[in-house]
Length: 380
Length: 174
Image (cartoon, rainbow over all chains, first blue to last red):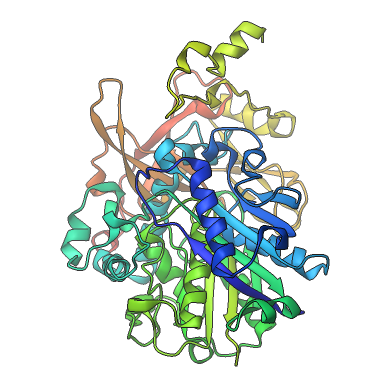
């Protein structure tokens, strides 16, 4: 694969009820990314957005974001999935050789609509919706219970992940303020309001308002634009069956396949040694452990034994992950941005030593049906 | 649908658009009528009237699907063989949801993935209303509770009743 570099990024701070209009927030993210990279509007040749018609409350929701997203007189297209999937589309556009700069942005404003109720409409209308009330949180409950049962783990093991991520989020100025808690304890997480037993409020990634933008460029342009481009050296994506009943919920087979594809592309044989940091999109605290195992960082069932603190054996989600703020359609893109920050040494308080190679993941669907993994590398 | 009702169902009413800061809008997804061709599922629906369950089996990978699937994703073929399965099942995994009923009182409801004996996949269902949710555990034996007069639809199984567990390792699995 030709080298494609991430040359700029920008993220709007996460708010639970932002004092922004929808257009304003997109403009701030995209314009900020262009300004940070020292570029101009006319440099943009293609724009890929990640939005969702239902989350935006209108049909063909990318048609109203043409001006603010930088798509005026450029070609523009939309991915109705996670921002990380929009990045994949942008990567393909750059690799086609016809484009010099791609803007990828994604985000949404869940303060405008009931997010968890909207997710109810994700289940099958014929076979599942009439039978029971299952949305993202209930299905996370299924997954957490299956995972704990299979490997004999306790709720404390899962709560530890939430504690670590909320503490990390306290160091991240862009994380959701309600999620930033440096003094949180395991008992706080377990005693929080129960969403769908065993999942409590503090284990769920809180939906919030934010937009993130990333700039991609082919090698020739990338080295001109910035001194510190971050190269995409591997990408893999995979999806499992739609019906929850057909899957083994205690593991993430799709993430295993995605990771294998991405590692093969990047030439990684021992992920634990070859990688320095991981930014994973976890909808619920236990998913981080399932992904850790799927990525081959630890054996199956040993996820809780790995020290994933910022200065631990293998840092995972030093930015706080999705538990530090989960703007639908942007979270995967934010994970990529945080990985880029780690590689460029721009993460500030939550910087992990010297990072050469990082992975970032995105997901969509119930219980992480569809997973995508990027391997990112700095200039050596 | 007439023009008038369509307008109403999409909640496009001009007088509500007074404010500039926030705009009300509703998507009534309940007005969407999903189409489903039941031809392929006829054996399943007919048997439901007799309070019996059948699942379909993929001739490619021999997996038994309950509820029946139109397509086996693994082999990309239509599962064409029908096999009988029992109406006894086990809890594959479960979560407890808290829902408000008509009187705005919060009710605990165990949502379960039900693994029928003889099937390879699970279906989503609810447990009987009287079940104490603290007693639920994975691999708990349960049994379908049928409606009095089944009509040949998916709603013929109202919920799942508990069965006596005579397994010796009951206390361990709890």
